Image (cartoon, rainbow, N blue to C red):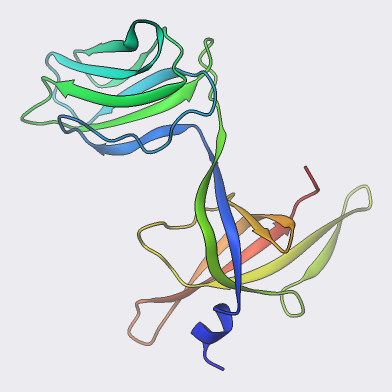
Length: 201
């Protein structure tokens, strides 16, 4: 059986805990939000790689007054004072011609990050080898930690990250390590992931 046929026999769900609402992207007139807030959040808008000047970011959404304006004269974060429950649009002006990048994170009123679990793959083809990769490690205090190995293809459009969560056969795992296995042409052939089984939430 080929490797692709093997991983097509099973699939798993993959999620990620993140405080990022807008991934760091080149500033354009209207960047598109990546993740909607799942609760009321304040915004940290971060500009990087810009030469400075007078730049403005307007975030529209479900918020008091319908929008919040962030004014920039240099790189760095600007912290919002309004709580958003939804973001409907982003408008930027004044950053050309050396636009730099923009990133938006969810924070509390006191500036602490707000993490939310977002979907990465609803059904990622994979194979979890519990016989060859499944081992139990006894930690101090006689706590048993179960470790397994997952095999999957590499998707460059949605790359997996360490600490992503994997749900397989009603069991929740965390990705502890990712190894790229290359083909003979030195291009990524597949990934081998070390998973730690987590306790039930």
